[in-house]
Length: 462
Image 1 (cartoon, rainbow, N blue to C red):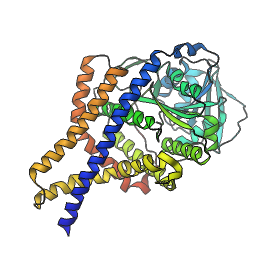
Image 2: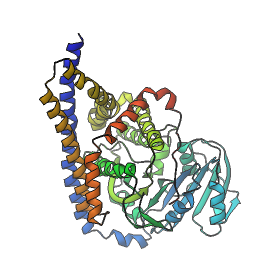
Image 3: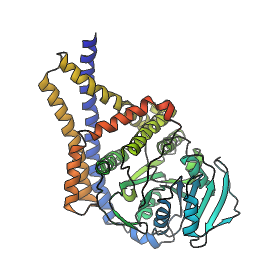
Image 4: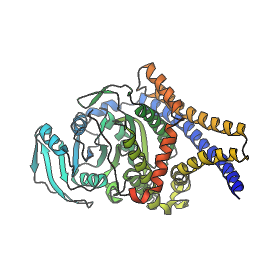
């Protein structure tokens, strides 16, 4: 019985690996064509002229801040320096226990005001609203702790403009990022949400809230994550966007039509509020036959801090897995449902089978394939060949993402950067990838315990 199970599982693994690699290959091809088309389009675009145009859609930038005293001043400075005709920055201090609010008061000369707020989305109590004497477009909201989603909803309530953008408090936008990311809203009235690419700032030189010199970090963990992020965004997100099946807009940098955001109930109070919101938009659009679009733009860059210690990285990856599961469970009625078109028939099944269940399958594979060899039902040459093919394909995908980066946006200017990252693209398959899989499996087994805990990640000053 055991032998039959192990043998059956091995055949399943072969099919499973073939299926996921085939999907990755299709995404890679789609990404190449999509990025080529986008660059051609931008080559003839006069988007830079829109920086000073009064016809641009005004935008509210929302920053949810909880215990962000080390990065909040630089983050706000970078946002206030953005090149965009009309925008406001709304910082929501979500009951921080550190000096987040005090740092904002000291650096931006805040004064408390009496301002009515229409609670279109229910949130925890707002204790105070502040404006800055130095910057007329800066608003700070001080409220009771309710979590990131609750803080963003408070920001939506206080915001004035029809487009809202959520930015993590440990992130920095490039100066023309808003102009680029708002263009889809101008070009297509059915655009409901747009995500930009997130890159890792660790190791780069940052001054006055601006990335002035892109470099790679000394931390091995951060270098692995650079490769991982490039693969996830330049292949994964671009590929899903080309199929109109994008399910995730990173919480670090997303832009939404405020009216749609309010109609779907705002940000859900879950750990994976970014994916949950996108799924709600897809569901609302398809049920009401609105043909709304959720898009990804590969070059409005948001720079963020990646964890550089194992504890923070573990917290982050478990949280991502739990957030994914929460979103999939809450929208399980869409799975394989033809009423939800490509989202229900293709995108959601992929996330259930390969993203949620995938870590378990991978871990079982690491256990049962060697077991198969020791009980004599697996040939050693086959086992080595299978493992080598899997690793080689992973390396090809990572190197493919690096090549796409090099020949498109070229953010890493020195040849040594690409050489070092290429080495890490190879090495990640021998330990780092397996460790991330283990953390995701841990998230699965501890789902009930972790689903209401955000967890804290150690930050550094920029």
